[in-house]
Length: 144
Image (cartoon, rainbow, N blue to C red):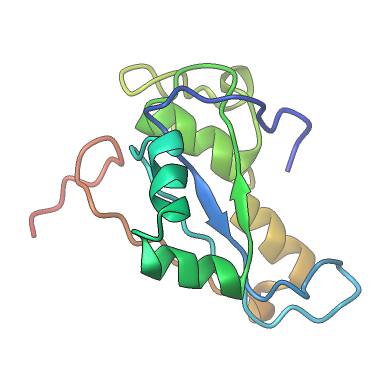
């Protein structure tokens, strides 16, 4: 990711990245599985409080298998479109054209972390999928 990856966040956006397995730390090692889980709209401090109290057992189990990384959005809006665009590209709004939920452009081809990983590892060595639990602000207006 780029240098502009993030230093602080408004409480309305929490991005939890869980990376599996923990031993996949360098490019030289063979990476077998990486799972990235992002949680939009959770309040970071409250989530950490619940983890400490043991009230999020499934999330705790995932963290024990991998790693929890706090990633902050520090430029532009921390709403869905702008926040996720910055997290999943590493670029600021001036580069992507995504400033907030109402002011945005399509992300240019090759900008996402997933596309760059595919280019690095080769298309036969990486599969990506996004499971999104909401319809608004992800430009998915298909009927369910």
